[in-house]
Image (cartoon, rainbow, N blue to C red):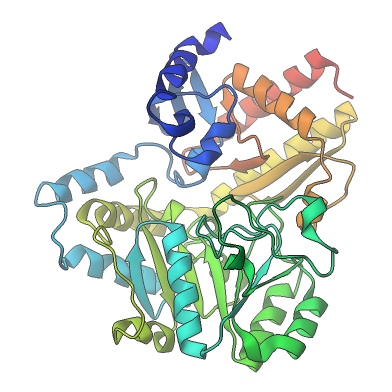
Length: 432
């Protein structure tokens, strides 16, 4: 572990002041717990001066790559005039209008600080609009860490209940037992179950919320016709359809998954790639719903909402994304995915790669496909952790849960280097 000595020392020191030595529970899972001091493009440098080709992209936000000058320059220019006014400024109008032009559902918007906040606001608006209380979500979908949304995001099978009738499983100590009472959980990608549930409980449902691509567990795309079916059913029953596009927004296409798949929700939440690493999110949706906030019927507040720095970052990022060749990133990702599949076939390894070019999932499994959350549990986690560790030691940084992110800064040479490194590891370890 001498390669990571400085990071280990910093982590030991951090445990004296930070709970668990980290500022997010997700970061506590990393082994070793690396500390970083700089990042540019597709490369990131740790405290021991190890340089990594980065496919984590800070859990997805760095879609333009690390430290793009166009974003940093925009933030610096804007913040020199002021950082936080406790009032309006013209940058937030420019940003809102840019998002309106890009995102199909965005008739009106509100800005906030995180995806969790945006989801919370979306659910509140849906309940106010419909006068109903229950929310339908899908097993394995993650919608933030607030009590009422941190339900069945990664439940153990012993708690989860029958596959066709999952239980609402709390994910944290300290959550009220009542947090899941108004949450109905279904498996992902089962149109018949959604239809049957709406026939019996549709009059009680305020909203259906989903990741349009189930990125958080297995990177599972919707089955053909699934999004369209749920869209139609929500319209029939007067239910608000919410797309959680915190990951897919601005990554799959400028207009997000709703643009990519051609299915428009009533509300959508965005974050991550929206400002290339700066902490901003937004709730966007139909005018009739967002008017509930506009008329002050629904409370949505926040001292730091649309502050100067994050708004400038988002506007600069979206301006760059308007010029971005999305097809190149999709193709580059497909090249990497196909290369990994071919290597697995050469080495006789049971490997499943699925997802889309800008974000995909790698799993060591005998399965031909992962279609829902419970399928995503049928993988060889030990081998995957060994693989991620071996890649890290050779200068390629991956997420331990198997999700790979590509950025506009990645190149064809990066992809070839990655494939060569994978081949070396599998050959040296004699994996079959």
